[in-house]
Each structure stands twice: as structure tokens, then as C-alpha cells.
Image 1 (cartoon, rainbow, N blue to C red):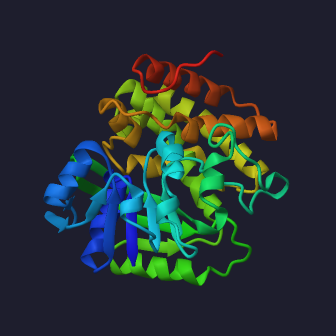
Image 2: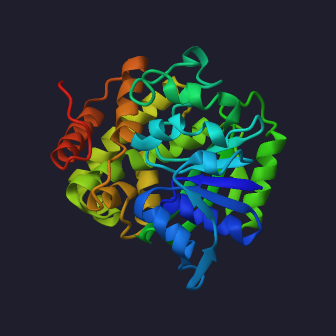
Length: 335
């Protein structure tokens, strides 16, 4: 396959490096120091499990999508605040058959494409207020991807993989339990590359379930500096997390995604991760824009749409947004 990684950060670099090992033609849209590093040294991924090895891949890299041409798959792994800029520059990479695999956190712009009952087709103002992303990347191109893995950047173009190999893929507008052939083939290619890849009959459910866990610990870790083990250890903080999760759980029921677990069930999963530094804490420490809207703001908006009160989610958003604004990592706007 011809595969373009749009945004060679931690997750995109990890996926790209592995696909390159199995003979796929990998290109990257990148800028600045990352672009220079990719041109000089290629893409590198340091694997820490089961043993320490470094994967290296020579890739074609450019800051202009037009230099790379139409692709079979475009893997978008940018932070949510950068998605509009990506969408505006995506066109040269798209052929009629191209799949755009979105390996991102939070609620995506395509969440209600072919899903949601009475809410089907709803556009979320927190994510794509004017529909520009949806217009630039038509729905038939989109393959959603939920990532269950932890990676970080050691340096531009150098990814470190910590744990997890999970990739769950699905088409947002899938109308039956029968997974599309193109998704099955993409899953097979990812499995061959070493990922624990699987296909979902309803990718929105997988998105929501992951969000249910990380919409809380991500921003709390960002404004406290604490790793997830510490967040889970403090009763007052863990109880605050639980209240937010109960609000999101009720919203999920309203939009057709019931969650059988209790917050404490999910906390047990989080505890097993140990002293885990969330992606949002990494962003704050690196002075990168934070994806509060995709992780928390969208849940607030869905609460308003479904008429579910969200006082604890609102408090979380207020605290996290204030800190991010003070650090210059989130836009300042009048209330």
C-alpha cells in the first residue's frame, strides 16, 4: 500500500515505522525539525517490549501534500486542534479509493455520520463548527481508528513505544455487522505489521468507551502534573473522576452507547497502567496545544443536546481550560 502519515508524532510515527517493515511505501507530511530529521535519518521507533529494539525506515517526507500524491491510506494522527489545517491541505493525497484513517483522541467530526438515531448527521460546534473538515474529507473516505497504546517522542522523528498494540478500525456510516472488505484488508495489513488490529461493527462505541476513561485523567493530569497512578490513589480526586464518568455514561445511554461497567470497574483498568504519563500532560510539558474540546468540550455539548446536566464535567473543563489559557495552549475567548 501507499501510506501517508499526516502528522509524524508519537502514534503516527509508531504506526508508520511498523508498516514500513512489512514493505509498504510510507510517506510523511511534516514540518520544521521533524521534517529535517525525517529527511536526514528517516523514521525511527524504539520498541521497549518484549525487548529493546529500534526500527528504522526511510520515508519520503515533505511539508507539501502535493509532493506525495494520491495514497491508498492516509493516517491522520495529529492533535485535534490541528485537524482543520490538515483537512484544508488533504486534497492532493485523496484518490477516489483512498481511506483516511483517523488515529486521534476524543470525539471526532464524523461521530454522527450514519449513527445516532435522531441525532444522525448532527454537527458538533466544538469540533467542526462550520463543517469545513467534513467538507474537505468526504465521509466515504473515513475509517475511524481507536488506539490503545502509549507512545512518546524522544526527539523529532524518534518515537518510543511504551506499551499496547491495539488498533480498532471501523467505518462511521457502516449500516450492518458486515465489515467492509477494504477495512478487513487494512486490518489484515496492520496485523501483519505486528499490531493487535481488529474491526468494529460500530466504531463510535469504541470511541466513546475510550473517551469514557481518558476524558478525565488526561486533563486532570495536565493541570496537576500527576501521573495516572497518583490520580487513582487520592480518594477525593478519584471520586471527582467517577462523577464525571457517570455524567458521560448517561449521555452515552441517550445517544445509543450504553456502558455496562461502573466507574470503579474502569478505575481498576487504569490502575493496571501504573505511573502512566497521559498524552495531554506530555502536551503541556512540551508546550503544545491541548485537545480539550475533543475530550471534554464535546461531552459538554452532547450533554446540552441530550439535556443531561454536566456540572462535574463543566468544572473539569473550567479548570483545565483556565490552566491551558494561562500557558497559551488554548485560545482565549469571551464567555
